[in-house]
Image 1 (tube, rainbow over the protein chains, first blue to last red):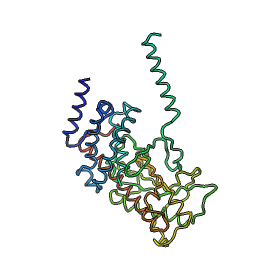
Image 2: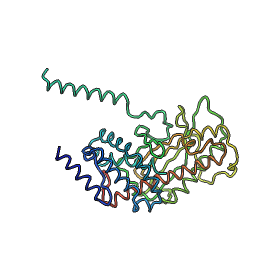
Image 3: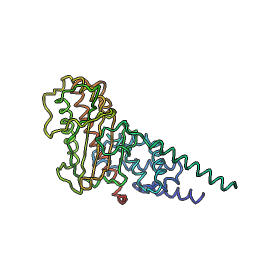
Image 4: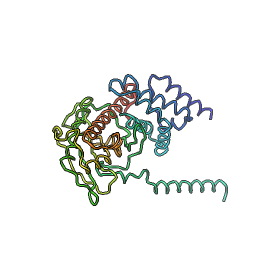
Amino acid sequence: MARGLAASLAVIFALLRAPTAQAIDCPTWSQLWPRQRFAVLDVMVRDAVADSGARSYRIDRGTLGRCLESHTRSIAADIDVSCGEAPGSGVLAPNRVFKSYIWSCAG
Amino acid sequence: MPDNARAIADRRLVALLLVVCACASGGPDRRDTASGFLRDYAGLREVRGARTSLVFIEPGARFSHYGRVILDPVTLWRADGPGRRDTPWAQLQHLADYLETGLRDQLGQVFELVDRPGHDTLRVRVAISEARRSWILRDVVSRRRPPAPSFDDRTELATGTRDFVDAAAIEVEVLDSVSDRRMLAAVDERAGRRSLRGSSDTWSDVHEALDYWADVLRTRLTALRAFDAGQERIGIPPPR
């Protein structure tokens, strides 16, 4: 229990310290507490609208970021479902879910 | 029965019920949205963002690898059978031509538009469809030429055209141009009414809606490119 919590916290700290988020995989996601999951999603949203990426592609970063932030609960729930359906899918499931929200939020 | 064995039997029963329920539900039912334009509707999932879309994204897709686009002609898929309203063919042709022109303008801002497949080239397919009808036929294919100038912004739409636009969905499929692997598929239902403020009575409304969808497609594809490019910059390898 304590070891699992420590591992989860290590993941969170690593994600938050990094200038940009590493892709999170299903096994790691499943170890996180809900609050930790939202912290991870916050970092992913930050990455999606980061200057280095979005600015060079002429995207309305404010609109995209606000839309993604307002849907973090849905994103988390959908990642839960996707990881539940394919727990061995590694980074693919969370990434795929997040990108589907980028698609729906952009524009 | 010992407790341990009973617990195992109970778990098996629960697992069996879950499997039966999953088979019975079969995931999201997308038959009612299938026009036939997309090769497969089974993988689409509803996503509520700025607008509700049905989206499939290939797990390993990396959009940042692509700098060129082959844009296929825009097609219109209309319901057939009883209740179909007569709609001037020229107006439907204009819809397809206008959207293709808009897509070329928008996608051309961020991709190089080409005609031949290549390793860094996406194939983009777009259709306007009456997604909730039973019998759908591919009806009109856009021609790569400027839309007819006869459809002035102030001109009223024919009734059939207005109904079609109001109920229309935009369907998109993005493929790797070499392998033909599907990277993305999406349906935005009732695209016409969603993007129009009020009813669509004139060509001005319709042009505005089609311009809007061309802009949205560019924005969405570039947002995915930007996200994937960010992931690559920090050294996340492409998923296998």
